[in-house]
Image 1 (spheres, rainbow, N blue to C red):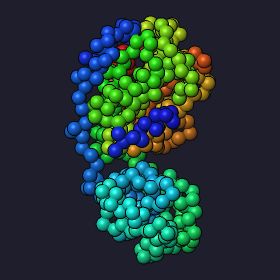
Image 2 (image 1 turned 180 degrees about the horizontal axis):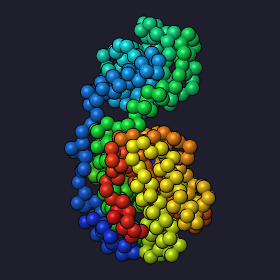
Image 3 (image 1 turned 180 degrees about the vertical axis):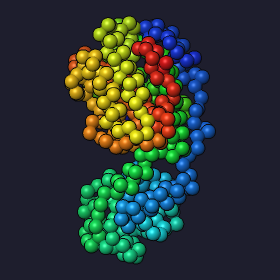
Image 4 (image 1 turned 120 degrees about the horizontal axis):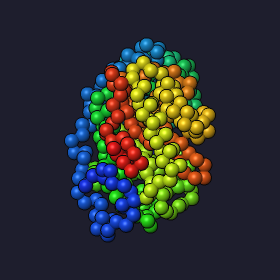
Length: 422
């Protein structure tokens, strides 16, 4: 996922295309280009958001893991972990807003005094104890006082892996006798295996993304720019009730997995790579399709078909107990056997990454990761082949591991270069 796409994915809380070849879209009528949003209606009115009981269950599960790991309290600030346990997106700047989640007892928030109203409005669980600090006071001293009050000033503090270093430094100064550990033994373990509501939100985000792509792809014409197509994707996703968009690369920009600063125009046979997604209740989708404008060359077709086989091979091995690296290996083997190896020569990146509150989070499908898959894990499967200076092909779908194998969310995998949604 490119930096540009990460930016738009942070905006949260932001007739079928079928098998019609894109060559038929080269000269759309003015009505199609102006009215591609017509007929799109929201797909998000019936989503089930994460609620108080869900947050309470997360706290209880976290405390069980904290007992196992010997952690006395979590210290969370300015991260998706803070949101996961409280429902609030705040902090991470020069003013400390943090949550202390002790192994025993209720959570406590440390909040700038002038932000109290906003905090109460946004915290979805645990808002009963909010400690305030004024602008001329030290919030880390306040955090230390809370830990002493809880009797754990000499205990083990699990620090949010996304915590800015200077936050950790100030906390350690305020509570020098505590021991500090990365909290990921708790946070990763919980978040990698998704709850049913989380899976439903990601599934719907995928479905919205697919429908947004379908609508926007109808607007492709000879003079459309990468930026215009990207904007059309954002507009379509917005009309469908979510926030998001797509990063668009015309060849040869597509030969760089995350695009280039150069802008290119379409010509007959041009490769178009679109990578994007949307968010629902802060949960992300991440979908890539590679198509062509008009008839593809034999070389492009061969690469596309190889990538499709690689994706299919990876999906076929996904099931509980399989090591993450084996999923990558299954796809990479197909790519190498087709002559696009060895290693990362043409397939230049790992196969996939976890998906949830972050666009990129554990687990990672990459060589060396022996973590076994578990039912409920959600991640991307996105093999690619990149011919430097010419074009690149990537197909990306999102899956959830089931007890029997996996479900491809959205059920709209590309089956041919002119059938990007099956």
